[in-house]
Length: 88
Length: 269
Image (cartoon, rainbow over all chains, first blue to last red; front, side):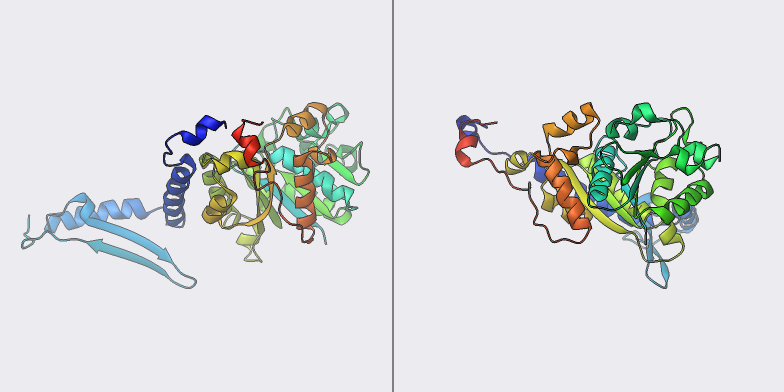
């Protein structure tokens, strides 16, 4: 660190970038850590069944798993297309 | 009652063995009979850091396989007669460790020792798993660096789910953060994660910060735990950590840049 460094244009510090990236990553990894291992397969099969009846895309379905002290919740969320869902 | 301490990190090269050697020596110097065990089977190095590499006859795996007794394998430290080292085997692989065998050795050590420090290998494989499985306290060694923080978080997840205490629904392992290789001047410049940043992410009780220090390499070169270098910043930082672990209220040091504005201004090193 010398005198000249004080006059350099300050950029976003790399440490704050590191912190931001870590916070997002760690939050994501913690939430997926306790999920049962069958979840991705379940999501895939559910999607296949739903697509038989409704024209939905891959990202229109989300499966999430939450664990409290005494209960486990499996939440299934499907976003139907804007217009009348039609059979395929 | 004996306490089993695991020194763990997930990531390699962050200072697990340096920390194990220093805190084991610190605890023994404070009058507590302490054993330190190398769990890094196949890549042992604790013996080298403790300076007893030429006195290894039997090792941890020999004791597990009942080819030697615990007393035959334990090496008394040359600097402190309350400290004993149980080296890892250099010729076997990690599968030589069994949960039953490790548990048996730890139970035997607990009869005679106050503290048992388990120096974990890097990774999350068998050696690392067994090093933390029987722990009462965990020292999570972390560098202020993204990959180390991420791996520490992963280890915390394992400590709370895959340990004996977790499996038997006992009181959870006490987890402590040891931030090593810390450079306050780089934190000040925004080039390094700060203590607060790391604590925000890991939410751990901070046991101490070890500054980046030349004394660590000097200590390993000579095979003396750095805590014996009482004049060095790293040695003092480890002594503080031992005191805090033993329940003393010691203020944190080495967190702020001690160099003044003018020294920074003129490029002081």
